[in-house]
Length: 374
Image (cartoon, rainbow, N blue to C red; front, side):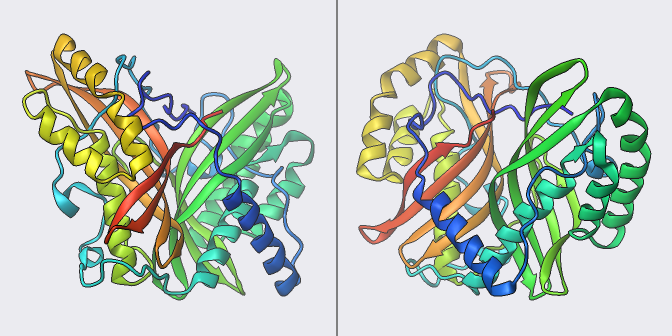
């Protein structure tokens, strides 16, 4: 399995070096505990079940996933992305392009979205963790969080590739889900989630955990009151399902604003630099705009001396939470250097935690935080 390239360029588009806000994590943990009590369930702790060994893909992904390409060396500047082009440049379904409401974002069912995120975290950690000493127990746990063909594929991998290789290599893999957001929820029984996770693996040759960052798209089905994995794909460069934010048009407006601002922050042409930079600044709150202005001269100088423009895309996005005037998103973005001949060189793949707040009559990005890759 190849690692997620999340190092980014030496100069990030927006400063994201500070500690991550802990309030959301604490809030999510409290909500999980409340749901666990309400539903009288025992949480499944994440030291269980699946993933492919050595150079193979994660076990449950082995039939569907594509590997992320390793990032090329990044330039000493900010990064990437094609010019602002509205929804056409973003992984948003046409139905998400409604513009009737500007503010007042609202989820269709906040409780259900919270349940999806909690169950997805448990399920992914279960099926992407395993321990050679108790594979049977791991398989039994995995069967409780999977369904359909995916459950069959999972069983085959656990009793095949993993069962034959893990004991000899003494392999232990633990999956740690960092963030979960909902990409779409077409009906009350089906949903798709975007997952940022870390895989930590040890074996007889190396007791020091080797950490790999992965980005997953999980298809979920509601089975007997819990959301189970019906399909899962590891996303690679440029991959991503179409998002349809599970809420009103105010939410759609916030999601569009957040994703488009990421594109804007990663998009600068030498010939259009002043306009591109101004466009990026206008989508930020005052604090982030000030941080970005501090990079302006270095960014333009690097592009000019290097003879390239920055281009990039947002290939996947999801909603983590929403209040009337504040929405949190997860975004997967790729950055490129584009030469005058049209050649594009991947320079960064970014897993982002983005917050947009309704200020001054419009949605502005107030947090742009890379998610850790180790």
